[in-house]
Image (tube, rainbow, N blue to C red):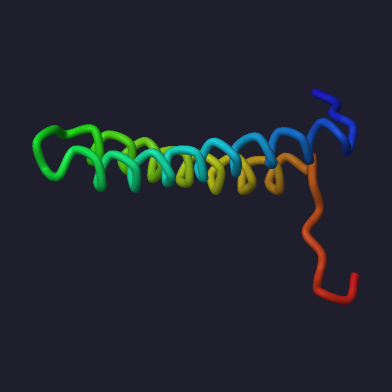
Length: 74
């Protein structure tokens, strides 16, 4: 599978935006529901799942050679 750099970057940004969306949703539900529903727990669980999926995706991409890690100074 060949991906160009723009697609890789877009995929990672999409994951980060979904993670931030679920984090914000968890905060919103926590403030509005005041413990009466489990929407906060579900939103934060999705955030954790997305974070783990992103880490595993990056590790897979490194292992398959799709991306190459580099140091701070390149």
